[in-house]
Image (cartoon, rainbow, N blue to C red; front, side, top):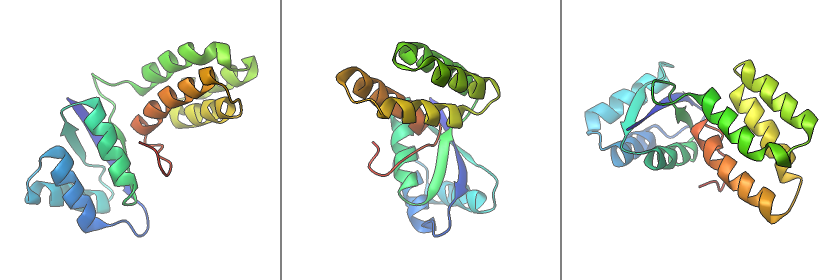
Length: 153
């Protein structure tokens, strides 16, 4: 089970499509999906549960296309700082020491999204098979953090 929290609706977010997407991805009935959408619009950060991390990532990407920002919810089964620390450990040899220190410092201060974005920006400046694989792997973590770019899957 993976919990996703809906963070905010951007200007122009598609309310009806959000409700429909929550129904399709989470198996919610219309009333429950509408309640979650309404709570989002009231800036209450509702949470929904999905069967797997992969289905949760799929929901986050789908919602991003509708103007809704969502991310994996912190909880006993998900610690973003631990996830980022583990990810940084796997790519540390690919990063300049100063970049790694900056990422670790940001992470220590709870700025996981900034740390991951900084790491991805520096890795994407290098183009080889090793960094491409690392960027793809970190891209999955970016989705978990709610950092979703156009065309990301």
